[in-house]
Length: 430
Image 1 (cartoon, one colour):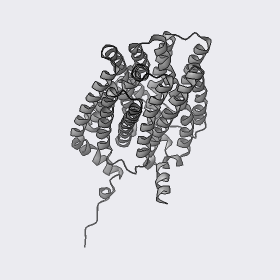
Image 2: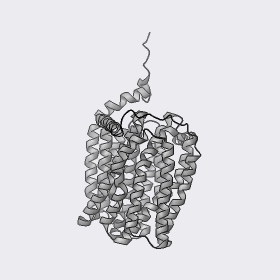
Image 3: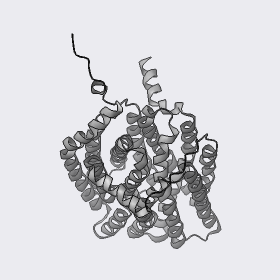
Image 4: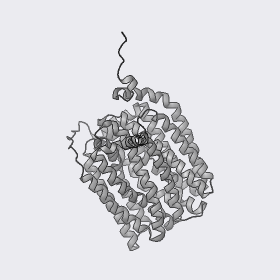
């Protein structure tokens, strides 16, 4: 009975019809997304045999987030987020089908891949912050928000586990074009789920200020909050230094572990295993209390796993370490997301979540380019070990900031009733 109740609590956000539709549609579509990511990396490496060009392709796909996402957050605080998501999903479907057509006709080359990857980056600059900000609109009970965010992470990482494993088999047997085609068709599920939702039309927000003024207002809000500022700084550091290790996986699979597409699929899949376990653990939590410490420890776990991964020459050890890094990375991202969504007011949600997206996607392209360049000079293993050491230092810094962060977020938790023991004053005795 206790296990059943715990499992029910971990799925409580699915009580909301709109979120249930979103969860079902995304669960299908994201498998295709991860298949395309692996297939793209594999094609670039096969075409170029270059770690630097792997990093460059990733850079091109993520750099739009650096420039576009902040202003996109301003517009998302004005626009209908549901409509934005429908448009971004249709455009992403077109992008994937374009890659499939090029692959099947034998016309694909590095420049086509880079161009279409750039297009996907532009789409993601709007899609990711819209997706994050729209979660609260799909949830009928605000108390289920943290659970919905954790379930989103479970969904992403379940797909991250299944998608690359399937892609590795398909690439080896049928070619990358099939992966792109499956991805394109998978968008039908999420587009249908969005159109089937019953969404109350939000009254249009009349802009009292220019977009740049509202962007500056959002930036000031982030900078002046020690909690939000520290969370985003650590995310940015790990994104620019640590997360680009995924770009080097084809090099590790082929040159270090002497494998092929299957090896690459298993490595990326094991990262998804760790991330999925992390997300399920967060989904079963009943409170956001203690997530600040989780951010510090998960960043340290990620950094430590990356250090040892750079040293490993064993496939089995590398698979285990990929699970460790996946666990740490997802724990930090999901815990950070939950705290931010909990403490940020609705009128600034789009802008703050755009800065959250910027800290993850916007900083990654710089790191991907840097990782590719450094790996070309000193090798992928040394690059990963050095990156892990820097992430460990960042985790130590964040841990030292926890007292200041708690002093900011605890009054907000009290106001929201998240700290029940102090939310309601006790009556004097007698």
